Length: 143
Figure 1 (cartoon, rainbow, N blue to C red):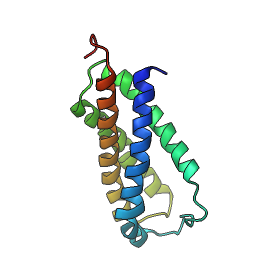
Figure 2: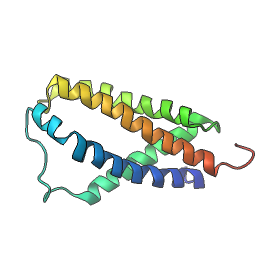
Figure 3: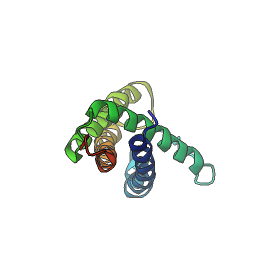
């Protein structure tokens, strides 16, 4: 679990998740989701904890990197990472999104649909990053 490949992929994915997440949800789509929110559940900027967000990204990156390492079975490619990440995004965005839509009043249906698409793309990109780090750090026999 704590191989060089896994740790480096986890680190790269953590940084990418933090930056890409901020760009997507903190800047690019903020006003869209404000329009589709049914409840103001967000903390103010002063109340947010960047440390907790970073730790959450670290936990997610470690889980994805560990699962990817087992899923890929030594065959690392950008396409494989994209496919892996897209499935994670489908689970989070569609699977968990439908559960949230069915049980909460956080967003309307349009907001959840857009969130699902963003999750698939976001996690697909993270999957590519993880796969490329695995590939770059693979031994000659695994390449």
